[in-house]
Figure (spheres, rainbow, N blue to C red):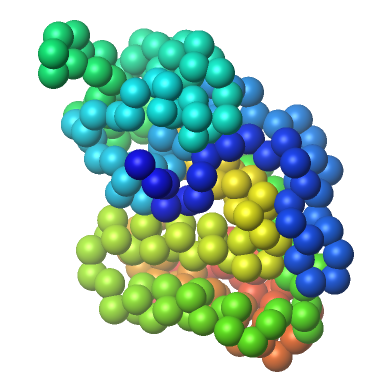
Length: 241
């Protein structure tokens, strides 16, 4: 299965160099995620992106291990831990396997941690501000077209789950547009962990954030670094009118 966030894999190598020089995810990340953290965050991200839903059977451990770039035994241990936490169900027999728990959302709510979520959110803002500053005035024509399409689609979306999916895709695609595939993988881990730590925002909040998305793209297109950075920061505190 191809994940919408890109091929899974820990960010052991530097990201491809964006315009103006290389960004090295090893410097950005500090301590990278453990294998168990990576499995948990990427499964949470898959659910946010509708690659899987509660009740769905996950790919076999070997497939996940290949996608994530970690050992199969690490994946099996991580899945077992998620089963013990109630996030996944293990079923035996011919139709068995590992399934996303039907009450995924209820179980995740128990795991919410506002302090850790705020810390990750602050780091994500720092990452995006750094990407904006690094590429300001050097975004090639056409690179923002896909992001603009996501902004337009969010304006029309009515389903709250679809709004969350599109917003997540926006931030993943922004990371890749400004930093390359390696930075996208790094952002994918941050976003997946946030899915586990914070309640989903209300649709009105997501729509308010989308105005910040549009402002950011406008300023990136103009090559205006300071206003673009302000748009990234405004996103964090966006509230409905």
